[in-house]
Image 1 (tube, rainbow, N blue to C red):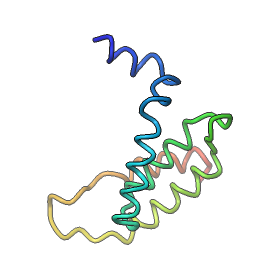
Image 2 (tube, rainbow, N blue to C red; image 1 turned 135 degrees about the vertical axis):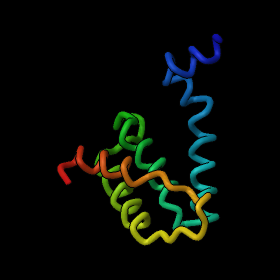
Image 3 (cartoon, one colour; image 1 turned 45 degrees about the vertical axis):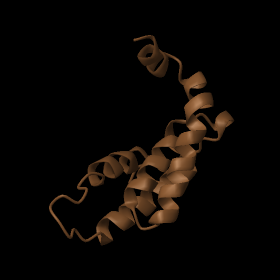
Length: 99
């Protein structure tokens, strides 16, 4: 229970221990499939919510959300079990930028 509280209540320390692992995982996912829009969504959310003093950027987040939307629109579903999530999330964030 204490660990769960730390995740919710202490984002600065959480980033120092887990943030770099998350960034490495996103980079690896992008290397494995640069056409996966969900990688860009997660990266964009990280940039959007991270303060600029710690590497966040609304400008970079917007570009990543736009890239994700472009990839989502090109995406072809080969199977019903393929991921379906992402478009509404990206649309929500792009609205935050007035698009």
